[in-house]
Length: 193
Image (cartoon, rainbow, N blue to C red; front, side):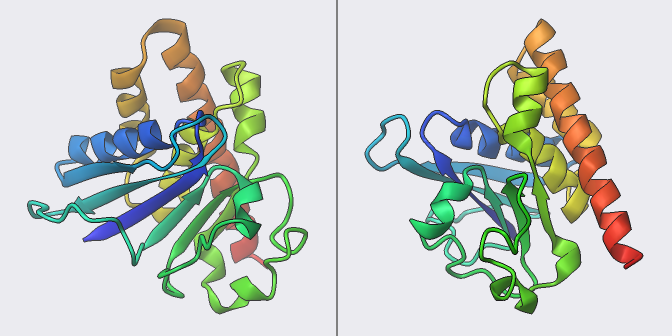
């Protein structure tokens, strides 16, 4: 079973991201589950949601304590919440930022991780550009598809279109596609270094 933990703040679409990720996996013929976890339930408060993906039915409903991947929608959580709890050195990290891991103070910490599984994308900027609102969730799903290979960008786009309609769907699909392209380009560049 592949487990994803998504961290963000209330109002950023954390729960929606987990739901769309599970739909994308389902569209590819897998079993999937999205589980929200709420705390104070107010805008700006730390929020976490989980997604499980497997080739077999999923019975577990508890929080993901040992994620295979982290998607971090708000980099200010890096120093407020233990985001990396339970993640193995083979884990994936998709981080919403336009700063490098070194600039965020994560450079040395992340040396024990596989570099091809670490990606940062300015998802909020992409969301503002395409959607007109600072909602990084959909662009981060595009980046996750690129770095993990677990789901295709086409399935992400179909999940987005299942959730939104018309111009909003088109704008979110464009944001996801651009994040996917950016992540692929970064990965190819890193492979040649």
